[in-house]
Length: 293
Image (cartoon, rainbow, N blue to C red):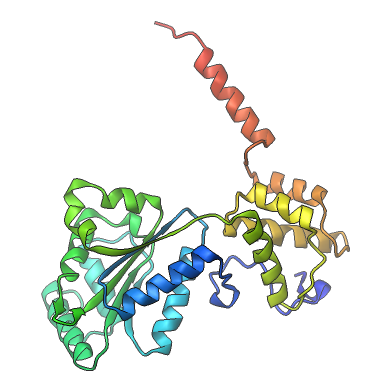
């Protein structure tokens, strides 16, 4: 809506995980390098974890671009609320396996054939599971067993599990210790530091045609970082709404007043905010209240 007003080629703060807008922070660059290395070196199991909105799906999209550019076969499971039967069916569809996709046995035979053929050609196959923290225990066990497929040159199937910190806690469970031992590489995404948040906003504005943006001042970007707590997705939401507000007010400079309005509309909570103080006071009052027997 506001793109023509600001002269943007496209929306700079879309919530879609577009690799074209990938900001290479030190941590994100390291994580992507580990994902690519894990696939190239046939390391088997790779875990990518991070809080909600820190860029895990964007990272996986970058990995997908790499796999497609290098003609590497892969299956991408974006819905992890599945049972064992659905898990194998989705793998069969994504890899276009020539078998009855409702038969686990036939899927396994067809998958093994594909893995061997790719290995003979010096290639590998990748299984990517997003939102892996939602996987059922039985599905995780099946994934562990798939990781046993290997030859003398390494694992035949490279498995990337991406999820929220709950995934790490899940893998610490005693009944998943065999899977945990097989995880060779771990990548963790954290919220942006202030410098990274400023560079992130500037890079997105530059990407859409405003390399020397004056819409967001240094002080305002600092405040955005604080209120978004460094989470990329929240930064996107805040900046997008502020640009919309500026467009409605027919100004090309965003202000703290606009930020206040947007934060109220988005019901943001950050250390020192009014909502945060009210929550702390409520909790303190509750803890001081006498217990009734």
